[in-house]
Image (cartoon, rainbow, N blue to C red; front, side, top):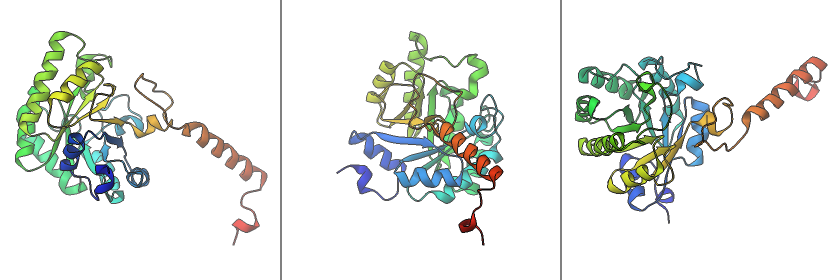
Length: 271
């Protein structure tokens, strides 16, 4: 019997149990009540209220513009929907880098105002003090290494990270640091599959991959991407499980036609 079928509520400890039993962890993003209701009911273990809301919900080119209050707004809707999944919320750009006191205030604000279960922070040694400060308050932290979208202007590109030996070793050091600090897991984004597998096998905490191969302990995708709502994003790592953009366009077109022709509403749809 899988851990999935044995548990009622997913916790950070559940994820460690899943890793120990070599059962893959399934994660997906959600940003509102309706979508989170469906995701949670399907049995997804971790719902990430990602700062990718800046892209798919608000139409920004990067994740940088979204604010702490906007992240809390999205998280509140998700939390109201969830009965089982672990809900992790991204700390947005500017809410924790370089100031551990600000990081703690931001994390506490998210936890108190949204009811979230954990936060996620991008980076390693450069934000060590902020991570430690948040953890000291009893707030669970998920790390994020490899391609870190909040640092896109530093990288200048969304290409694969840690391909060179120096950066690969830096990632190894950082992922060990995150575990030693007390993070309950770490997202590995867009790094070579061989490196991700190696790192996952050396850690006691679970790794969640996105564009990091199948050697990670779990996987995550952005819900708008995997459902085919977002048609403008087609990286190699993305598998589309539906084509909702086409289905929705057909529904809209039929609705327009029915209203224009007078067919909707008919007698059965009227009072």
